[in-house]
Length: 115
Image (tube, rainbow, N blue to C red; front, side, top):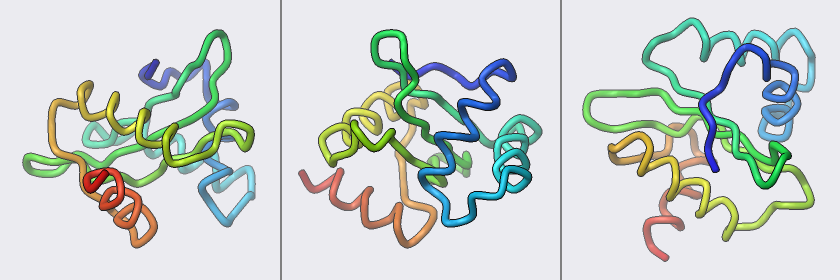
């Protein structure tokens, strides 16, 4: 289940975003998460399974669509199927088309749409 990011989940969000970034510097991760807090055109969601947050997905809202900026799952939950479930739920929640914002996310979005 997707849950909208809240400040009380800042450390969890930083840890999950670290899975999607090459840079693991805590200050960089904090600034990334805070960027979602401060920009009204960005959305960050945590993916919860049972009582644990196992994934994260972040979007930049554009004119009529959302660009996927970050997507990450805890290592034990990785796989295209789980990523697709996360994207399916995000699209329902956002109620708009999702597109890739980076080279990596574009490839994932293309696979997700073509399945």
